[in-house]
Amino acid sequence: MKLIAHYIFGLGSSLVVCSYLETVENLARAPLMSLDVLLASCFIISVGVNLVIDRFGHDLRGGHISRSPRTHTLPRAALIGIASGLTLALGYSLIFYSLKGSPSGGTATKDIRNIFSFPSYYDYLVFSVAGATAGVGHLFLDVWTERGIFVRKQGRWKRFALAHFRANNPFINTLAIILGLALLFAWVAHISPSSAGLWFP
Image (cartoon, rainbow, N blue to C red; front, side):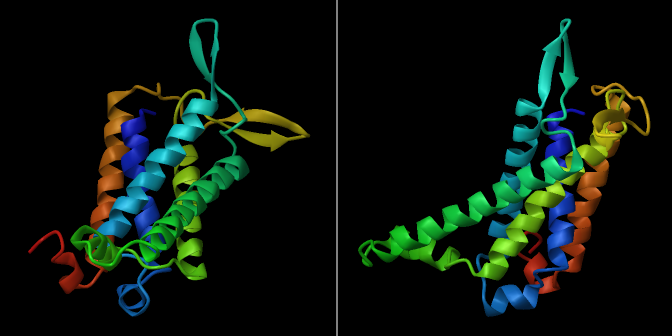
């Protein structure tokens, strides 16, 4: 599957899953960030997770790209996602501490402080779940392609696929993008009308 399809599907699926963990009310009470920054953060996580899975999980054999169980297994893809989510949350923590020690007079610094606050343990959980969802979502798309993913059988990694579309098949890639966009709009519909006004005034 093409990376753009993975990016959009990973974004939509992670936001929908996070909507069950982080409601608009929770964001208002103890926010890590505003909803628009949450959207951007899930996109960063999706891009990072999918890049790592494909960059380190593809081998060149006989002039053709072949998937490897290094990253194309459910537990490893989920762990890559969790690590990516924790890394981003840690980055926000470092931003918070750097701003805390900076002069308070700068307008730009004050503006950034209005966006970021110190991540709570719950925020780390939300980001970890977002990353794990993006990782598992990557394999959900790949399982419909001819090279499939890897599952453990009798102590060995075996290829598993539900269909055999080519990874660059326009139909399956377009379908994945449409599904990702549908999940994104489902998340927008889930949040309150006042929050939706961030994008649709």
